[in-house]
Image (cartoon, rainbow over all chains, first blue to last red; front, side, top):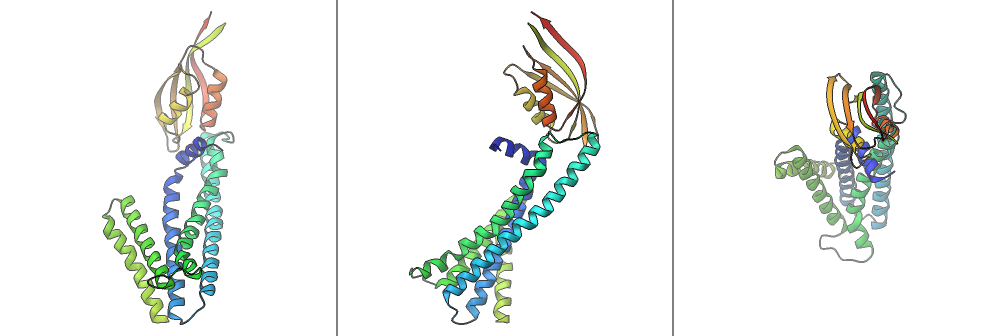
Length: 191
Length: 85
């Protein structure tokens, strides 16, 4: 499948918007999950860094797999339904058309974005933990540094949403950050 | 050599791809293809077009394939202009 064909399929299926939404929503999920997990380890005293890294990696992989499978199943069903409706309106089979190809390819593309977003963001958040494990000295310590990275990512996702929605970027970023701080606060109270 | 120089087609297509993208897809089949589209009717999911294609040597099979690939359906050939050189 060529890049030009992929672009055509994205255009006729309006999938760019869906993929952008999935990227932000699941990326946000990934960042908050990692933040919560690391905060949990932070409030439980003296947990081995290897255990933290393994737990975070396992959670990241689970988020990725969940994102891929859930998006594929729902998108494939939705695309099939739309194609059937269109074939009904056209009173003909669209098997040879871009619309039929979109039913096959678009669910995979959307699923990949949906799965890769939380996985990628989670892996970025884990970087300070890996650095600390390999001997790099971090100013705030590994767990706090990872939480700062998570907060920065949450803020940036908010900024991105603000720009997409045409609202003030700083306000949108601060809103996302407020949700992250509430999450951190709740975990602190529970711990 | 007989060459088709003008075709007027009655085409039913879904709203996507839009008329501009559809016209580009047909026009890209030949360097001298000129495509003119008139939207005759718009329904909830489909639109009926009058597609006029002009060129020195139109390839009907490729045009028909491009129409099918776009998810459209060729209803009739309303006008043709053919030159026998």
